[in-house]
Length: 146
Image (cartoon, rainbow, N blue to C red; front, side):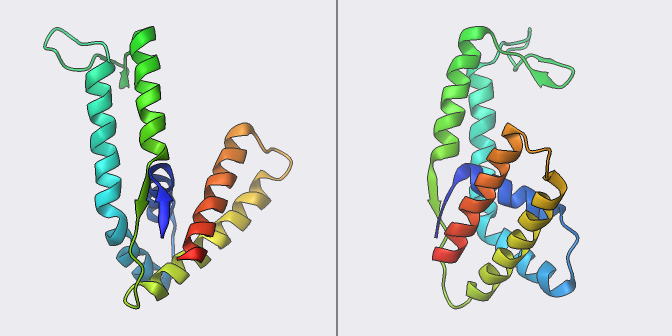
C-alpha cells in the first residue's frame, strides 16, 4: 500500500486523536506501529529543514519567537520547497495476512471520521477543508487498494 508522507502524518494525527471502542483501538494501535518509523522520519526531516533554512539565534540554533521558527524570505521559500517534496514522497506499507484486518478496521474508522467531518463542515467548507477531505479520500483509496 502506498501513501504520501503527508497522508501518513495526517493519518497518524487523526487516529491518535479519536476516541474508539476497544476493538478499533487495538487495530489502531497495531496500525500506528506499522507507520511509526515513517512518521518519525518525516518529523526528523522537517526538523532538519528548519535547522537548514531558518534564521539562527546567537547560539546558532533556529530562531524562534512565540514558539514559531523564524525564516527570512529566501529561507522560507527554500524550506517550503523542501517540505513540499518531502510531503509528496511515497512510502510503502506492507500488507499481509497479519495486518490486513487492522487495515480494514482503520479504513472503516477513516470512512466514519470523513462522514462526520463532512456533516460538521456542511455549508462551511474552506480551502483547508477541501484539502483535508481530499487527503482523507486519498488515504481511503490507498487503504482500499492494499
